[in-house]
Amino acid sequence: TLVQDIQTLKGSSILLTEDNKTNQQFMSILLKKYGLTFDIAVDGLDAIELFKTNEYDLILMDENMPNMNGIEATKKIIKLEKELNLPHTPIIAVTANALKGDRERFISAGMDEYLTKPLSKKKLVEILTKVLDIKND
Image 1 (cartoon, rainbow, N blue to C red):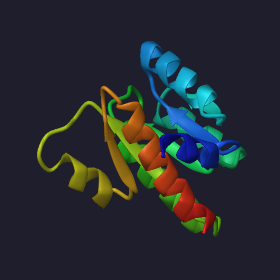
Image 2 (cartoon, rainbow, N blue to C red):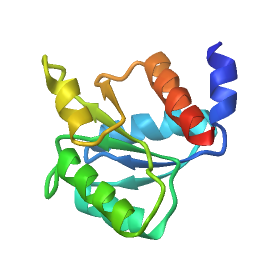
Image 3 (cartoon, helix red, strand yellow):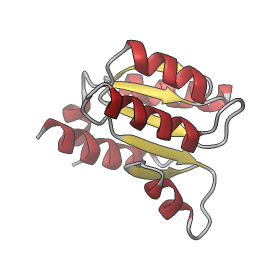
Image 4 (cartoon, rainbow, N blue to C red):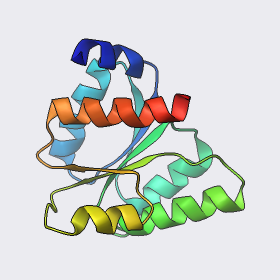
């Protein structure tokens, strides 16, 4: 059930990469409600800096951001993981791009999952649970 799924999420640490203030607030409310701790990065460059100094269970990565987009940031984070011999942190694309082929484009860039905006709470919990469960195995 959704309630059980939310229970399994509690205490996980998330990096939310999102440049839009409204989306940041919406996601903050949801993540707090689900008992997750999180940091907010305002663009890809910010996400990389936060990734270097913190440990996250999961990264929610907006695609369309100023300075550095989600795909570029994802590639840089994966490169850092390899260079520093770190375990892979699951990265979920969060995007308004829901065109045919977009999911494949994000997955081939190294992202683990894909969520479209506007976000469905049920789908968010489903994907968070799935990805965090894999990480905890």
